[in-house]
Amino acid sequence: MNQNITPPEQTLPKTETEREAKPKSEERPTSREIAKELKRLNEQSRFRQTLKNTLYTLITIVALATLIAIFVFPVFQVHGTAMSPTLKEGQILISIRDSEPERGDVIACYYGNKLILRRVVAIGGDSVQISDDGHLFVNGEKVREDYVSEFALGTCDIEMPFTVPVGECFLLGDNRTVALDSRTSLLGTVPNDQIAGRILVRVWPLDAFGAI
Image (cartoon, rainbow, N blue to C red):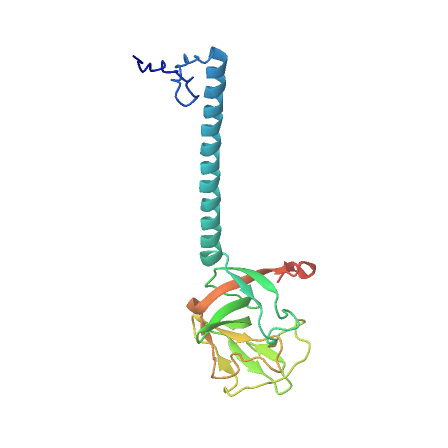
């Protein structure tokens, strides 16, 4: 009688994925490695702090410079030819806040909604007279004006001699043929508190750098 004999099962070798990974014992860092890592972290922290302090310093400097430029030393740019040949188109000027102008000062003042640059030729209480050929007399004395290249009466609709009200100033442009200034009632005399700044120095262009 024939008997069915089942061959013994053959066990196949396990694949790599079936093998259990043997846990590896963790290696402890050496004291030198620990010290190196601590040094790196410390340097990184110092760098962040230095960067933060530098940014705070720069922000503070920019803020202070902005405040100074607005409230102490306003900066203006020349537009037009009313103050030529003293000032030319595009030049950049630094001024100082000053509500007590003196004769001869070049100032920036408000005219409507814009700023203009003009020269103070007379202050409160002064008597102003301009001759038909454009020469200026203040309190009866002829004023020497080396900054004027061409004298002219220009647009003038005020009665001469003219007495400047106290607390105000009489302004003229150095370019007497075209400047709109205190010779006309459109501008008139300017209250001292409307002066935005007294021009100190021309800073641009560099070849024109110098005091005004």
